Length: 346
Image (tube, rainbow, N blue to C red):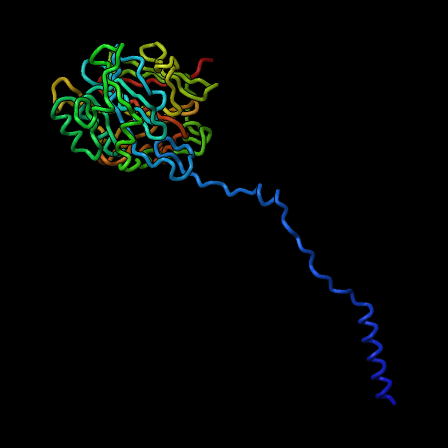
């Protein structure tokens, strides 16, 4: 009897438990709406442009760089295409005047110029870029030096430049040789893109000069009695504006030339190839200033070999980072040049 009662009780408890347990319901099915699935996008990968540091679509800048020896004689102004350069080097040549080694890669114009002859420091400047260099000729020894560098020499008057170089009407010789830049780059699209030349920050505010530099109203440079360019800070555009001998330096559209970064290097000048033609010694080291974001930081520069990029270090030995954007590099001679950082007007 006791066993039968216990069994009956167990059955009753089991039945009650079954009656009170919550039913197990199937999980609700969720079907994504068409709006949800179509609005989601995976961000396209980006990479810094090698000569500007600006972010661009990854693998979008596979073209080689194009450098050109740009005339800076008064009769050559306004130059064509300087407003679209990635990097420009200004160098002293004979007679106290300057010329430019201008370099394009991220934004190649249809036309650039006027181009002039090569000089002995140009192979050391350009060997780290590779790509193409366009010029109008030069002393045979300087042309041979340029041809020996790891850069393709496109020279006015040669058979391979008949379709891309010409003399422009309305300009006086020798300041009239111009280059169909985009066509020239397309002809040599098999050449490699340049490597990154400088270190870059994320933006102007995080650049080394903006973080650690002294406020700068203008940067006054002297190359010689004939050439004394300056750069004035323009807050609305967040750029330095260029002047030559006290007057605004204009491009062919009438716009004043500007730079996100101005890198000033003190360089030794030697006359080891020609008694009248100076050579800026580029495989060397020296004093530097870097101007970005309305400020200037003191630095040092070094270039270990022709194929090595220029390294910039602050006074504590840390790498100087430029802001993304275009850069002008001023090669101010040690013997006759000067650099003056002028604070903003009160």
